[in-house]
Image (cartoon, rainbow, N blue to C red; front, side, top):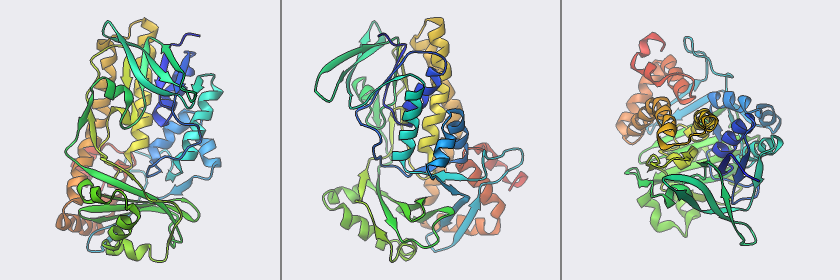
Length: 398
């Protein structure tokens, strides 16, 4: 059987573009090294605007039925203990898709998306590891892959979509991965017994670290601590000890989780930030984390994966219809990505600067205590439904 599109990776980005292109009647092959459902290190936060895309993909009802936790807002604790709570609400003409975000384990979310891929007739091959991308005459023309029995397969299509996450095999084979100066590591586990951790996510800023509590179930909280990579490197074989020591050095977080019990091993992921150069060959699109990643503070991962897949699907469908998947034509997607994500990226960089400096983080928290509407505006930007540029004119709405 021949295919119109090969999608490498069945996480949110890969599943989303497979769904959107299968709905157009295209023949899709999706390859992933895992068998679903499978666990995935993640903050497990779905912004209000992410819910719009999940609805478009036809899976929001399944997400609700799976027990996703509604989050009305975020509570942020500054280094000096000042705490502010913002809510997702209408800001001028900008309304959240729902008046809340959601928290859901990635194991559950990804399985729901994969089930939707299957339901639309796309071919999904699990436990199939892509080992190389095939290039001829300046175009990607397919991939080489190995199945669970170590048999090698060659699949061909006029368009390859790399959605294979951080450390993408496709991006690495083509020499597109670039180091990033922001060197951080995330340590992630689950805890239970955190009192009244149900209706909002919680962020604790304590430079050079920050931590996030995200209630993914009635008594199960995703607990993430982000630290400089250099601080954690020597502890790679003693992550549990390093995690406990780091939490104890964040006094407001330590008090918040006092008496809580870890119910999963501590897992690490890093370096978090990396750049990916745009492809210079035809027949190739990069979506999700395969296109680059910065930092998880604003919970950007799943939204950018899904929205990037939306952008890529429009360009891919038009290119396939025209019978031309040249690098020039597909570069329309890169330009759309820059237009769509550049302002949020600048906002995230600015936020990282604030949380990296203790005095500035405290001053910002004191300002937000006096101007709670400004905090809601900030949260609207974090929630992906308010344009970041609005923060340049906060008096109009905050």
